[in-house]
Amino acid sequence: MTIEISNITKSFGSNKVLKDISLKINGGEICALIGENGAGKSTLMNILGGVYKMDSGDIYLDGNKVEFNTPADSLDAGIAFIHQELNLINDLPIYENMFLGREIKNKKGGLDLERMIFETEEVFKQINVDLDPKTMVRDLDASYKQIVEICRAIMMKASIIIMDEPTTSLTESEIQRVFAMMKTLKQRNVGIIFISHKLKEVMDICERYIVLRDGYLVAEGDVSDVTTDDLARFMVGYNVRCNQLSRDKKIGHEVLRVERLTQEHAFRDISFSVRAGEILGVTGLLGDGRSELFQSIFGTDDISSGKIYLNGREINIRSTYQALEEGIGYLPRNRKENGIIPDMNIIENASIATWSKFSKRGVIDRPKHYEIFKEQIKSLKIKMSKSTDSINSLSGGNQQKVVLAKWLAVNPKLLILDNPTQGVDVGAKEDIYDIIIKLAENNIAVVVLSSEAQEIIRLCDRAIVMYHGKIQGEVSKITMNEHDIMRLATGGELNLSRGGEKHA
Image 1 (tube, rainbow, N blue to C red):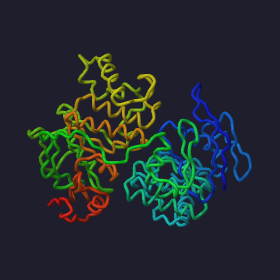
Image 2 (cartoon, helix red, strand yellow; image 1 turned 90 degrees about the vertical axis):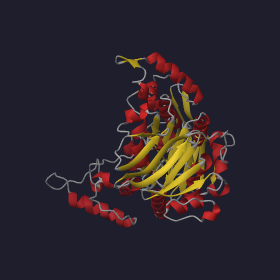
Image 3 (spheres, rainbow, N blue to C red; image 1 turned 30 degrees about the vertical axis):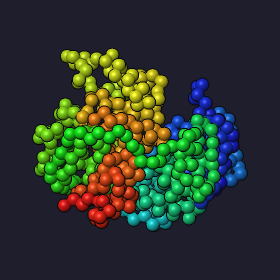
Image 4 (cartoon, rainbow, N blue to C red; image 1 turned 90 degrees about the horizontal axis):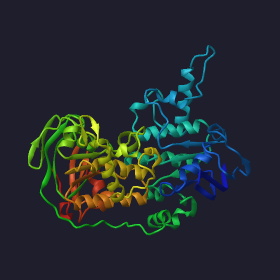
């Protein structure tokens, strides 16, 4: 199948989101659709997916003009849209998720479970997926949930699959599993539109690229003809830094020290420290235990054994409220699930962590919160209209800045950032890096948890690498590189003469 979009425009009120967009996607190719948040990518794909109606323009399938008034129209034409927020139900098995909304009935009107299981197995066999259809979705890791969504699209005979940020919440090993699936689909002549902010992934998996900026199509071509620097420049309209980030470094006193910290089945015998003004990276692969480790330090989970010292004083944190009182902030991973509250507006999301600090007799001092937030809007470069607008009205990068504002409002001495640039575009990512550097320059101890080796290398003074719940080694700013980080993350050891430090 070949799909062609011709001169499409779309406005929401006075805001013109798409401006005369024309592009073509062929079956059997993986084409990247990239751009900053707000560039028009999602609007364009929602038109293709039948969610929105265009103001003007045409869509052609194999040369025939078509019109999509509903998502069902688009799906019936062979176009499947896999959204970033997966549409799976955790409390149902895989095979029931595969047939949601189009369940197979038996002669008595009940569900024909055996046939649903059989047809799911057949799809899995076609594309070499080793999964039991009866497995509950809640027991799958993030990559297999993506694969189930892809298999559901195949079962619906999709010839074009739109994948919106499919790797945002995945580790490196999970990403490779999804990429293998995409290559299998390509061999079956399925066209894939790959939306991503991760430019290295675009270079690894895509053949062509299309770049939107401010509603215009500003660049397109073969991936083999460009670099990640070129793509970043197309996206934002100027050269983006790709070198290691520097700052006025003044490392101060020890803020956090943990000794032999253990939580059964998550992490074991963890010892490290971080100082004021330092940016410490923590990285690894799936199952490394880093999120569980720092959630325990923040008081969301219990610790089996070990000691935690804050500013030289042993503490025993039993709740997140206590952690906040001690001066610890924690920006969690998976912003949409753990960072924002969709039913609250922007300023409510930005101030919720400080309600108890700025209230008297149960009455929240809203003017005080607004005064603090006004300063944060400027310092964090948050792009928004009114503070009382829905948090959902903001781009992913600006939502992440609001979540960051929430934790900065408590004036932390130690700030833990779990995947701080997850799901944000290249411009917002650089803004967040600048914010982290300024925090360190202001004598805050910062811990950055990230699966992206390049992020760790560019941002952090040193990094500990975890493997199966233990610290496998440490790398320093001067000598750290992707090869050494991956070697440690997969259970290997470093040649100490090259500057790596092996932990016992």
